[in-house]
Amino acid sequence: MPGEMLDFLAALPYLSSNAVVVLHDITLNQISDNEYGYATRIVYDVATGKKIIADGVDPDEILPGIGAFQITKDTMKYVEKCFSALTITWKYDLTDDDLEQYKVIYKKFYHADLVELFKKAVTLNRTRMLKEKCKKEQADQAIIDFHRCVMGKYKLILYGGGYWAELVSQYLRAIGKKETAYVVSNDIDISTCKIQNNIYHYSDLPYPEKDCCLIMAVDSEKQKSVMRSISENSFQYIFWGENYIYDRLAMYINDILTLKKAETCLEKEV
Image 1: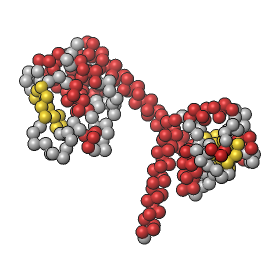
Image 2 (image 1 turned 180 degrees about the vertical axis):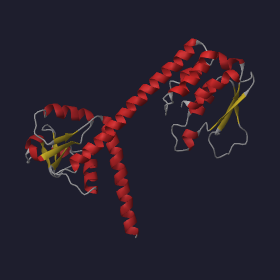
Image 3 (image 1 turned 90 degrees about the vertical axis):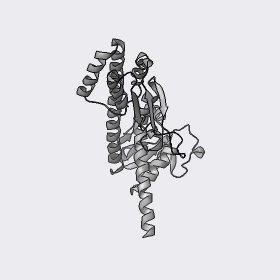
Image 4 (image 1 turned 30 degrees about the vertical axis):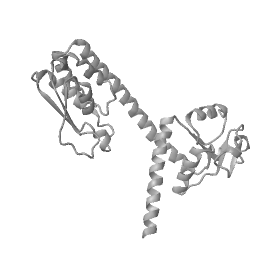
Protein backbone atom coordinates (compact mmCIF):
# COMPACT_ATOMS: atom_id res chain seq x y z
CA MET A 1 0.00 0.00 0.00
CA PRO A 2 -0.88 2.55 -1.22
CA GLY A 3 0.30 2.44 -4.85
CA GLU A 4 -2.11 0.04 -6.53
CA MET A 5 -5.16 1.42 -4.75
CA LEU A 6 -4.21 5.00 -5.65
CA ASP A 7 -3.65 3.96 -9.26
CA PHE A 8 -6.91 2.05 -9.51
CA LEU A 9 -8.89 5.03 -8.22
CA ALA A 10 -7.08 7.29 -10.69
CA ALA A 11 -7.75 4.93 -13.62
CA LEU A 12 -11.34 3.95 -12.78
CA PRO A 13 -13.07 7.09 -14.19
CA TYR A 14 -11.37 6.50 -17.55
CA LEU A 15 -12.33 2.83 -17.90
CA SER A 16 -15.17 1.67 -20.12
CA SER A 17 -18.34 0.45 -18.42
CA ASN A 18 -17.42 -3.23 -18.83
CA ALA A 19 -13.62 -3.07 -18.63
CA VAL A 20 -11.73 -5.88 -16.93
CA VAL A 21 -9.13 -5.00 -14.29
CA VAL A 22 -6.40 -7.65 -13.97
CA LEU A 23 -4.33 -7.76 -10.78
CA HIS A 24 -0.98 -9.48 -10.37
CA ASP A 25 0.53 -10.80 -7.12
CA ILE A 26 -2.68 -10.89 -5.10
CA THR A 27 -1.04 -13.43 -2.74
CA LEU A 28 2.47 -11.95 -2.80
CA ASN A 29 2.47 -11.27 0.96
CA GLN A 30 1.91 -15.00 1.61
CA ILE A 31 4.26 -16.59 -0.93
CA SER A 32 7.30 -14.33 -0.61
CA ASP A 33 9.32 -12.41 1.96
CA ASN A 34 7.36 -9.26 1.08
CA GLU A 35 4.92 -9.24 3.99
CA TYR A 36 3.68 -5.80 2.92
CA GLY A 37 2.83 -6.86 -0.65
CA TYR A 38 -0.91 -6.90 -0.12
CA ALA A 39 -2.11 -3.79 -2.01
CA THR A 40 -3.37 -5.67 -5.09
CA ARG A 41 -5.23 -8.11 -2.85
CA ILE A 42 -6.97 -5.22 -1.14
CA VAL A 43 -8.00 -3.75 -4.49
CA TYR A 44 -9.30 -7.17 -5.56
CA ASP A 45 -11.27 -7.72 -2.35
CA VAL A 46 -12.60 -4.19 -1.80
CA ALA A 47 -13.55 -3.03 -5.30
CA THR A 48 -17.09 -3.96 -6.30
CA GLY A 49 -17.32 -5.88 -9.57
CA LYS A 50 -17.73 -9.30 -11.16
CA LYS A 51 -14.84 -11.29 -9.73
CA ILE A 52 -12.79 -13.52 -12.02
CA ILE A 53 -10.21 -16.12 -11.00
CA ALA A 54 -7.80 -17.49 -13.60
CA ASP A 55 -8.14 -21.07 -14.90
CA GLY A 56 -5.22 -23.45 -15.09
CA VAL A 57 -3.96 -22.66 -11.59
CA ASP A 58 -1.04 -24.68 -10.28
CA PRO A 59 -2.67 -27.38 -8.10
CA ASP A 60 0.04 -26.92 -5.48
CA GLU A 61 -1.00 -23.32 -4.92
CA ILE A 62 -3.56 -22.64 -2.20
CA LEU A 63 -4.73 -19.45 -3.93
CA PRO A 64 -3.91 -18.11 -7.40
CA GLY A 65 -1.54 -15.18 -7.71
CA ILE A 66 -3.61 -13.45 -10.38
CA GLY A 67 -7.18 -12.22 -10.07
CA ALA A 68 -9.44 -9.90 -11.98
CA PHE A 69 -12.83 -8.26 -11.87
CA GLN A 70 -15.15 -6.77 -14.47
CA ILE A 71 -16.40 -3.24 -13.93
CA THR A 72 -20.16 -3.01 -13.32
CA LYS A 73 -22.56 -0.18 -12.54
CA ASP A 74 -21.93 -0.84 -8.85
CA THR A 75 -18.15 -0.34 -9.03
CA MET A 76 -18.40 3.44 -8.90
CA LYS A 77 -21.49 3.32 -6.72
CA TYR A 78 -19.57 1.61 -3.90
CA VAL A 79 -16.17 3.19 -4.56
CA GLU A 80 -16.18 4.67 -1.05
CA LYS A 81 -14.92 1.29 0.19
CA CYS A 82 -11.77 1.77 -1.87
CA PHE A 83 -11.15 5.24 -0.45
CA SER A 84 -11.72 3.86 3.04
CA ALA A 85 -9.12 1.14 2.36
CA LEU A 86 -6.51 3.88 1.88
CA THR A 87 -6.50 4.27 5.68
CA ILE A 88 -4.85 0.84 5.92
CA THR A 89 -1.20 1.12 6.95
CA TRP A 90 1.05 2.31 4.13
CA LYS A 91 4.50 0.82 3.67
CA TYR A 92 5.95 3.89 1.97
CA ASP A 93 5.33 7.60 1.46
CA LEU A 94 4.95 9.50 -1.80
CA THR A 95 6.23 12.89 -2.81
CA ASP A 96 4.00 15.93 -2.48
CA ASP A 97 3.92 16.21 -6.29
CA ASP A 98 2.74 12.61 -6.70
CA LEU A 99 0.00 13.04 -4.12
CA GLU A 100 -1.10 16.31 -5.71
CA GLN A 101 -1.53 14.57 -9.08
CA TYR A 102 -3.77 11.95 -7.50
CA LYS A 103 -5.76 14.65 -5.70
CA VAL A 104 -6.36 16.55 -8.95
CA ILE A 105 -7.90 13.45 -10.56
CA TYR A 106 -9.94 12.58 -7.48
CA LYS A 107 -11.33 16.12 -7.18
CA LYS A 108 -12.37 15.97 -10.83
CA PHE A 109 -14.29 12.68 -10.66
CA TYR A 110 -15.24 11.92 -7.04
CA HIS A 111 -17.42 13.47 -4.35
CA ALA A 112 -15.75 15.96 -2.01
CA ASP A 113 -16.26 13.62 0.97
CA LEU A 114 -14.13 10.98 -0.75
CA VAL A 115 -11.41 13.49 -1.55
CA GLU A 116 -11.43 14.49 2.11
CA LEU A 117 -11.12 10.81 3.10
CA PHE A 118 -8.11 10.52 0.80
CA LYS A 119 -6.49 13.55 2.45
CA LYS A 120 -7.13 12.12 5.92
CA ALA A 121 -5.56 8.80 4.88
CA VAL A 122 -2.47 10.69 3.71
CA THR A 123 -2.25 12.64 6.98
CA LEU A 124 -2.71 9.55 9.15
CA ASN A 125 -0.06 7.52 7.35
CA ARG A 126 2.45 10.34 7.03
CA THR A 127 2.12 11.14 10.73
CA ARG A 128 2.63 7.49 11.66
CA MET A 129 5.61 7.09 9.32
CA LEU A 130 7.22 10.23 10.72
CA LYS A 131 6.84 8.86 14.25
CA GLU A 132 8.29 5.53 13.16
CA LYS A 133 11.23 7.30 11.53
CA CYS A 134 11.88 9.27 14.73
CA LYS A 135 11.69 6.10 16.81
CA LYS A 136 14.11 4.32 14.49
CA GLU A 137 16.58 7.20 14.72
CA GLN A 138 16.25 7.24 18.50
CA ALA A 139 16.72 3.46 18.67
CA ASP A 140 19.79 3.61 16.44
CA GLN A 141 21.28 6.34 18.63
CA ALA A 142 20.46 4.27 21.73
CA ILE A 143 22.45 1.34 20.32
CA ILE A 144 25.42 3.67 19.86
CA ASP A 145 24.99 4.90 23.45
CA PHE A 146 24.74 1.28 24.65
CA HIS A 147 28.10 0.47 23.08
CA ARG A 148 29.72 3.59 24.49
CA CYS A 149 28.61 2.33 27.87
CA VAL A 150 29.74 -1.25 27.24
CA MET A 151 33.13 -0.35 25.76
CA GLY A 152 34.02 2.12 28.52
CA LYS A 153 36.43 1.63 31.40
CA TYR A 154 33.80 1.19 34.12
CA LYS A 155 32.37 -1.96 35.68
CA LEU A 156 29.20 -3.21 33.97
CA ILE A 157 26.25 -3.92 36.24
CA LEU A 158 23.14 -5.49 34.71
CA TYR A 159 19.89 -4.69 36.49
CA GLY A 160 17.81 -7.83 36.19
CA GLY A 161 18.06 -11.58 36.49
CA GLY A 162 15.85 -12.89 33.70
CA TYR A 163 15.49 -12.88 29.90
CA TRP A 164 17.06 -9.50 29.21
CA ALA A 165 19.95 -10.11 31.59
CA GLU A 166 20.72 -13.42 29.84
CA LEU A 167 20.49 -11.87 26.36
CA VAL A 168 22.73 -8.91 27.15
CA SER A 169 25.29 -11.05 28.97
CA GLN A 170 25.46 -13.46 25.98
CA TYR A 171 26.12 -10.49 23.72
CA LEU A 172 28.78 -9.05 26.00
CA ARG A 173 30.66 -12.34 25.99
CA ALA A 174 30.32 -12.60 22.20
CA ILE A 175 32.09 -9.25 21.74
CA GLY A 176 34.77 -9.98 24.30
CA LYS A 177 33.28 -8.07 27.22
CA LYS A 178 31.81 -9.34 30.47
CA GLU A 179 29.37 -8.11 33.04
CA THR A 180 30.80 -7.43 36.49
CA ALA A 181 27.62 -8.29 38.40
CA TYR A 182 23.84 -8.44 38.34
CA VAL A 183 21.47 -6.65 40.67
CA VAL A 184 17.75 -6.94 41.30
CA SER A 185 15.28 -5.03 43.46
CA ASN A 186 15.56 -5.62 47.16
CA ASP A 187 12.12 -7.25 47.27
CA ILE A 188 13.02 -9.91 44.68
CA ASP A 189 13.76 -13.47 45.80
CA ILE A 190 17.07 -14.10 44.05
CA SER A 191 16.50 -17.88 44.11
CA THR A 192 13.70 -17.38 41.55
CA CYS A 193 15.94 -15.59 39.02
CA LYS A 194 17.35 -17.28 35.91
CA ILE A 195 20.71 -15.76 36.73
CA GLN A 196 22.13 -17.35 39.84
CA ASN A 197 25.80 -16.38 39.82
CA ASN A 198 27.23 -13.05 40.93
CA ILE A 199 23.77 -11.54 41.55
CA TYR A 200 22.93 -9.20 44.43
CA HIS A 201 20.12 -7.15 45.81
CA TYR A 202 20.55 -3.55 44.74
CA SER A 203 21.37 -2.37 48.24
CA ASP A 204 24.09 -5.04 48.51
CA LEU A 205 26.03 -4.11 45.37
CA PRO A 206 29.67 -4.64 46.44
CA TYR A 207 31.11 -1.96 44.17
CA PRO A 208 30.96 1.83 44.49
CA GLU A 209 28.36 3.23 42.09
CA LYS A 210 30.84 5.83 40.83
CA ASP A 211 32.96 2.97 39.45
CA CYS A 212 30.05 1.42 37.55
CA CYS A 213 27.74 1.78 34.56
CA LEU A 214 24.25 0.36 35.04
CA ILE A 215 22.48 -1.37 32.16
CA MET A 216 18.77 -1.91 32.61
CA ALA A 217 18.03 -5.53 31.70
CA VAL A 218 14.29 -5.56 32.46
CA ASP A 219 11.19 -4.48 30.53
CA SER A 220 10.28 -0.82 30.05
CA GLU A 221 7.64 -0.62 32.78
CA LYS A 222 9.98 -2.16 35.35
CA GLN A 223 12.73 0.24 34.25
CA LYS A 224 10.58 3.26 35.02
CA SER A 225 9.83 1.91 38.49
CA VAL A 226 13.52 1.24 39.11
CA MET A 227 14.58 4.69 37.88
CA ARG A 228 12.17 6.28 40.34
CA SER A 229 13.50 4.17 43.19
CA ILE A 230 17.16 4.98 42.45
CA SER A 231 16.67 8.63 41.53
CA GLU A 232 19.59 9.45 43.79
CA ASN A 233 22.62 7.53 42.56
CA SER A 234 26.20 8.11 41.48
CA PHE A 235 26.54 5.70 38.53
CA GLN A 236 28.74 6.94 35.70
CA TYR A 237 25.95 6.14 33.21
CA ILE A 238 22.60 4.35 33.20
CA PHE A 239 21.37 2.78 29.96
CA TRP A 240 17.59 2.47 29.75
CA GLY A 241 14.76 3.17 27.31
CA GLU A 242 11.28 2.51 25.95
CA ASN A 243 10.15 -0.86 24.59
CA TYR A 244 10.83 0.08 20.96
CA ILE A 245 14.46 0.83 21.84
CA TYR A 246 14.89 -2.53 23.53
CA ASP A 247 13.07 -4.31 20.69
CA ARG A 248 15.60 -2.79 18.28
CA LEU A 249 18.45 -3.69 20.61
CA ALA A 250 17.22 -7.30 20.83
CA MET A 251 17.08 -7.54 17.02
CA TYR A 252 20.62 -6.19 16.79
CA ILE A 253 21.94 -8.55 19.48
CA ASN A 254 20.24 -11.61 17.95
CA ASP A 255 21.69 -10.76 14.52
CA ILE A 256 25.19 -10.51 15.97
CA LEU A 257 24.81 -13.73 17.98
CA THR A 258 23.58 -15.56 14.86
CA LEU A 259 26.55 -14.24 12.89
CA LYS A 260 28.99 -15.27 15.62
CA LYS A 261 27.46 -18.75 15.73
CA ALA A 262 27.79 -19.09 11.95
CA GLU A 263 31.43 -17.96 12.11
CA THR A 264 32.14 -20.56 14.79
CA CYS A 265 30.57 -23.33 12.69
CA LEU A 266 32.67 -22.32 9.67
CA GLU A 267 35.85 -22.30 11.75
CA LYS A 268 35.10 -25.83 12.96
CA GLU A 269 34.51 -27.03 9.40
CA VAL A 270 37.81 -25.51 8.27
